[in-house]
Image (tube, rainbow, N blue to C red; front, side, top):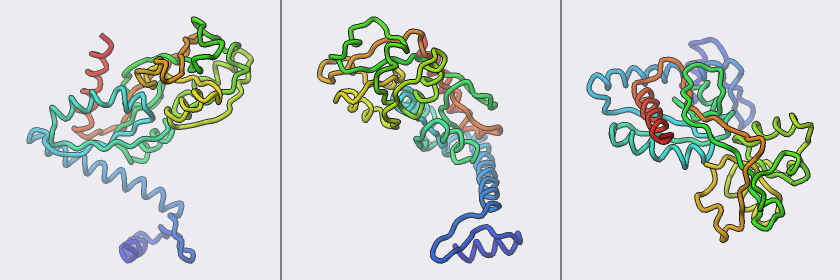
Length: 263
């Protein structure tokens, strides 16, 4: 590998890797060329899939980025089942990360397509669904029996928010009401947040579809309450231009799945 990198550096007449003692890291130009390399490999994969499509789209790989449980648990299973049923020879790779990281993966060609929060000004964005945020509280909390709660009701409560979606969506709503929420923890795992709430470590605000189906059962010791004004979140799929045939097929199946779910 070292000889191959050195040979490429000699050919391009630039330093791609900075070597200091036992550590090595990409240089600035090395990082830029890595992005270009991923673009080239993506196009090469698209060429391979175009040829495969002429034979019936029987092989290939679709790399999907997912920003959290709403997409991974509630939307992906139905999409994957339909996709595998129609294209059994095409493999699907799922990588999970916060929304902003998924966006970066798309730009760097680490993935072919990603679930992202909308609106997104980038091209090739396919809206899939809209869901609503709810307050999650211990079942014995005084606000748990309310029909709805407002930002003013929650301003004095310690909040545990997820980085994937609640953080960018919730804080602007509090700010619009002139309120500064008491954010105790920023987390990435829904089950961790629910555990904190159940143990009395604060409350949370998260998308209703991200919650387990049995969140309202007494054995979880949790309750969900609607928010007023409502905080809605739109989810979609985003890819880059010149998508491979398998990626286009995945998008079309995801679009149909979202349409059927909305009926």
